[in-house]
Length: 406
Image 1 (cartoon, one colour):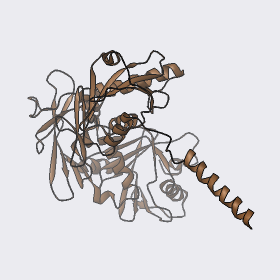
Image 2 (spheres, one colour):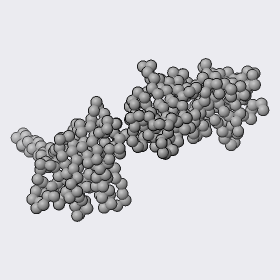
Image 3 (spheres, rainbow, N blue to C red):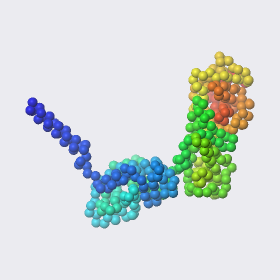
Image 4 (cartoon, one colour):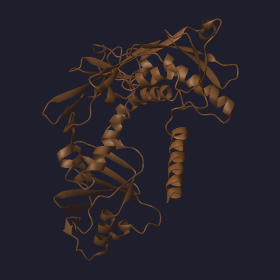
């Protein structure tokens, strides 16, 4: 019995010793710089960089000019600094300034760090802390980074350069590039552009309504800002009609478009913010055709709901549910179809086009008008102002067009 207790005691001691040596981390002594950096990054409120100032305000990171900062770049900077591992500490450097010849400094809250050059070995670089005489050697192999390269030596250099570039970004590079996050604009009830309208309440009653609204939001989210933000509208207003958003609280917000004085670009002027945001070239061109072309590439969508049999009228006559044309149309409505274009038109234009429709289809209070177009069909929902263009696939089993009267 005594032997068993003795063996159990020895085993317990060995297990405890193993945990202390391998898991407790008591032998892993952190350097002063690592400790200070970790504490600073727990809940930072301010980054002072050589060419930019970033401050946390009301739960949002902003640049020195008060604009929203780029969240993904801030996260990269935070992760890179958080992953810094000190390989060794130089405590007796004869001339400390040799390691920090550029004089490049940055701060996290009230802690100021010194950025140094790469070590001759190419696998580390020097970092300092103002008020601390030591020179810290950062292990590039252990440092996290979004840098990429095929060779390790090039990768280590890329890691160093990537973090250095982040620290040197000018303030306009830190500013959020996308228009919607800059405006902190997320949801709206209705949208209008002259007689063009998009009503979220009407769309919510369509089986495909969410997909259509997502297509509109995707267009808005693609808009990017580039250049200086103005505090007054530019002198020349664009011919593009203003956009009016109605928010859920009933407030109306307008986007007014102005031309750049020298370039073929657009500004978006928001009267309630008293700011004009310059769009980049791609976004400026996009605004010129959006949302009249809500989706300008092939996409898949289901127009109907399973099990719901629509009422079909062809050339003003009701088509029986047993007819081949009716069965083909029902299959079409209830299965995913690939459409070429999704457009938004005015109610007046839609009604005019609907007069020339060959087929009218009614289902669950929704009316669709079908018009023959080149090698396919145009489908209209005039209550929403949306039209789909469907091109007839070659040898398609869904070629119901041949089943209908010419």
